[in-house]
Length: 330
Ligand code: GCU
Image 1 (cartoon, rainbow, N blue to C red):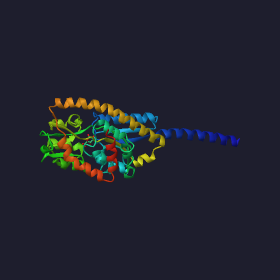
Image 2: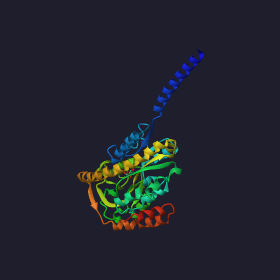
Image 3: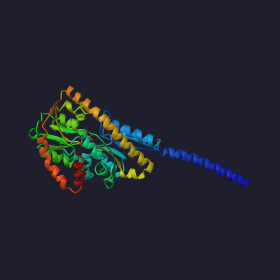
Image 4: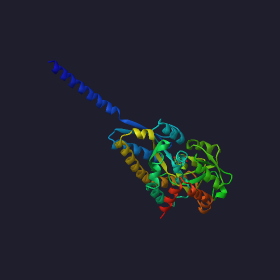
């Protein structure tokens, strides 16, 4: 009798434990916080939402990603610092900002290193370049997950720029990155590092005479309201990069890690498609805003920054990537 009672008790507690475990494994469904500095109308926000949906789907809801846009959780630099300490899980930054955290990203920031968009995509996909760089930063507290197209970077200014000579004496906002500063000095302008979120006001108040970026900065971020000339010298193609904290990564199951990487690949492909369409539309919008699109002879710009290429070939961290990128130019 006593035994039966005991058995009943065991069954009951086993059932209770089972239901508790069920409940707790549900509440274990983890939500990763992802920070970025883009507008909700920007293609990168759409690509990150796409990524979040894919992660949820591929893990059957076990892992979720919540996207915080507009620099709500800090500038790109602040987000990276939070990531390193484990206070934030994921962030979208770009190769220019990341160069200060992992010098390997500097390979992408050498002006005119890519012949065209196809060359750029070959380098991102290459095991010897893009894929190796993504995994090169684990020791610095973050791991690269995926690249996103961020177009080609061009000057936009309050006075027309046709050649580097026109940049002389102009204060041009750059990203807080050694390569960006160097490039601007070689072009003859005076570089002013600022976070992206402070740029509209800096342009408006004439703290700077211009900046450089893809056409979306002019339209989606309305910088074209205050800088009326867009010079298509195409000096750089700097990818946006989605990264995850090493601390978060190490806590994830193998299945969830695989889902994140697969979702990253799909999001890169999705962005490739929407970026092309976006750029065409935004160029038309810029013209409608009264921004003059200036096409230039790129040679004087290329010559001005040539020393950076030579320096990179001597830099032990970057040189192997530069060589591999060159080999992909065919
Ligand atoms: C691009 C890039 C952003 C970056 C910005 C900048 O728009 O996608 O990640 O913040 O350039 O110039 O700061």
